[in-house]
Length: 303
Image (cartoon, rainbow, N blue to C red; front, side, top):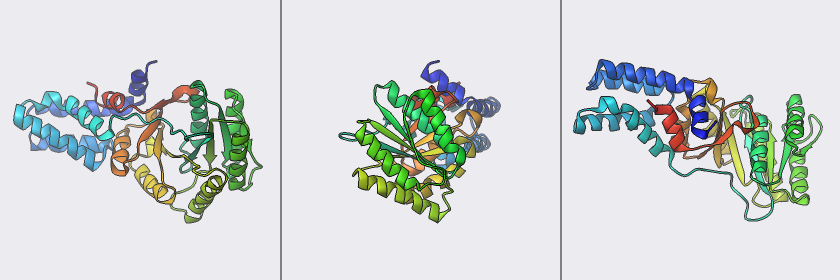
């Protein structure tokens, strides 16, 4: 399956709902009067595109109607263009440290799919000819260490882990040391899920990052927040709070295939100006796809 086909399949629920609503509005009122524009805004907001992006699309549609008088047929093309513009053209792959080990910290609230995402990133790194190492720094959830070990066996990636309940920062320290000693290219650190509202848990995450930075100045080189697309715009609050506690370098959005609120990707990227680096579009190791604004906008607003 090609990249566009994967995006299209992943965004099927969001696209179906949007396309149905837009066609209904345009068919009834090809000239898009005030009532039609209001309904169009409602459809865009329902897909969690957010007020700023929805407003941008509406202004462009209104302008096209005023200048060309035929906006109705072009709503899809206009929306696609505006979303692509919002997201920016630059594809955002993983950063690489100038030399030696690159450390990537995977953070987020409980249940977003961080452990699976860490493993999928390790797979991605390996398929590009780099050597990966995984660190099981979620020492709170008993199954997390076992889950990461199982992924490690499946992908043939070594996992550095401590005992359940061990100090996560100590595990991170050992993992950085192991990565350096083994000449690894990427260390992917699976951190414990934590509510963005729990100050003490955020401090623990800051400590974990400080310990890694002492061991390897500059680490972590990437801090990627994993967001569950099914939570819609609630994910925006998570992103805001995590970004305050540990400055984020990018976003990974999972479970897009299970929601009709896929527009949240655009809204969050627009508000926080953080690149969406990958999308989770399924359960398999290769279902973590690099984000592509053009493909995403096309899958969201294809006719």
